[in-house]
Amino acid sequence: MTDSKYNLSRRHLLQGAAATWLLSVSKIGFAATAQIIAVRVWPSSTYTRVTLESKTPLKYKQFALTNPDRIVVDIEDVHLNSVLKGVSDQIQSGDPNLKAARVGQFDKDTVRLVLELKQSINPKLFTLKPVAEFKNRLVVDLYPAKGAANAEDDPLLALLEEYNKGEDLEKKLPSPQTPKAGKAGRDRPIVIMLDPGHGGEDPGAVGKNKTREKDIVLQIARRLSALIKKESNMRVYMTRNEDVFIPLKVRVAKARQQRADLFISIHADAFTNRAARGSSVFALSTKGATSTAAKFLAQTQNESDNIGGVSRSGDRYLDHTMFDLVQTATINDSLKFGKEVLRRMGGINHLHKNKVDQAGFAVLKAPDIPSILVETAFISNLEEERKLRTSRYQQQVAESILAGIKAYFANGGELARR
Image (cartoon, rainbow, N blue to C red; front, side):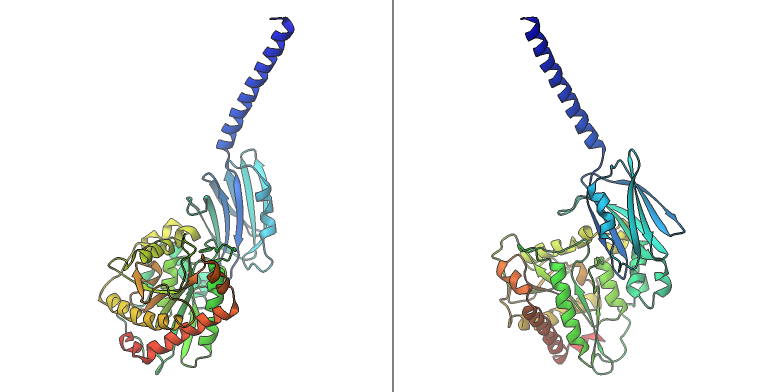
């Protein structure tokens, strides 16, 4: 081999070796550094949530500063990127809790996130493991510090605070055996709690045309609420009236605190087969699901807390059950109520099943409130997705549920309500 050929071959070999070394360093470096792939801000009147998502687990430290009030979050092993830089653009002027957000590379391995506050805040930070389409998440919840003092004005906020502290909410709620004063609809108004499913981080099912379940069911609930408010003998409350995530057990707790006579959770179903269609009504079962479809649906709906983001401090209440004779009677009432609603839903849409199905839905576990889950249509079905987006069908659903409420009480629904 000539000297020139030898030098050329040696140069190629060294270049190849160098490229391999750089590639290995790059891979090691990438593995050692978490990359933020999404930042989301969910403002609401109840609390504001900031979520940072990464393909790898996030490590953090937090502290508070004053003048002005702000929360500082140092995220370790993270480098500043365009996603993080965009956090300031997500802050809305109408956010009651968060004024501004700034981010910078504090040192070579730490990103500092500064959240400037509009009022005194009780922050709650926690991490979430991957679930559904979400990767690892760091969640920053900003609760107004004055919330506990204003518990009467905002009972939902008080329940959320207690839940996040790991307190047993059942001890703060009326006993299932405590009689309600007067007969609903005659001596006092009928109290109805509407529960638009999902919200905030949890979009629910998403149709082919990007229709989100959480948006559709909130619109239907608002329409139904408006109709109920026109009834002189009824009062209505909602577990959420904005795009905010509320844990399943807090939804149930709010209904019990308001001494609701009925609880109605509103959803829009989805299935892997887009041919699946029709409306359904479900009630609770304590003895297993009455069908494979009901079991599958309950499993997906009960995942809401994992998707929406619940800190582990609330697990004690999440795992607590209170099934007794009162619950058995309540389930029977739920089936009667569900039958009335299902019958009216059959007048506006194809029914997926001609009877009320049952499964272990966490959101239906109030021991003393007849509770149903209404699947208004299959959002995964192209035709029904289009229908769900229309004002006409949303209004028809609202009117059908109200007709079911009236029929239930007209047919003696009050009898078991004590």
